[in-house]
Image (cartoon, rainbow, N blue to C red):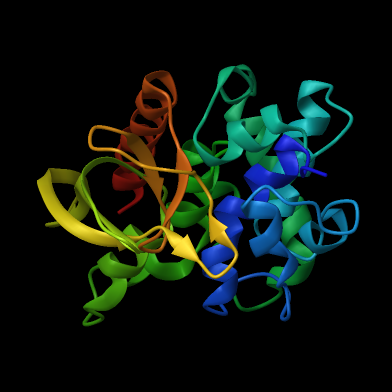
Length: 244
């Protein structure tokens, strides 16, 4: 039996950072099967609830949009790349409700999670990367890996320009920082697109538009989805730059 579309979408985007140990529960092998389209004991809702970053966003997006299931495909698409639900939600209201949910788990570690973030709040993954994660606070420090971590963690649209057995060459614009965050010039690089269970996006051809997360092809995008993802990335850079 095939995994529900919303379950598969969630698994596609969280699999790679989870496999690297950056987020979510340990021993989440079921994510790989679901990301490749296979069912895993009825889905992954139990696992999804353990992703203390992504789950509160999808839960809150669903509540504010009148959608019953946080793993509904429309909700997942709103969070990861942006869609009509993203545009309909008031960012300030969302930010206040989100920070209230994060407060208990943030404790004294992330003291910056205050109303000062509301100007840049949005129901998107890129807000989580640039606003909630601590790495933008290290951009002006002596921590050279900050830009690399931010660029790896964001979802980036890219065009396939070459296909190999286990990797593809993609053309994408990388995140840059020269006192301000921006999306730089196009460059080519190799990224993975295959796991032992199979491929998340099926066969790829030159010219396909895909989403990259932690150096892995996690999704195939339509032109509209790519445009929305680019829009929200640029929007977030602009808002975050005001704080920086």
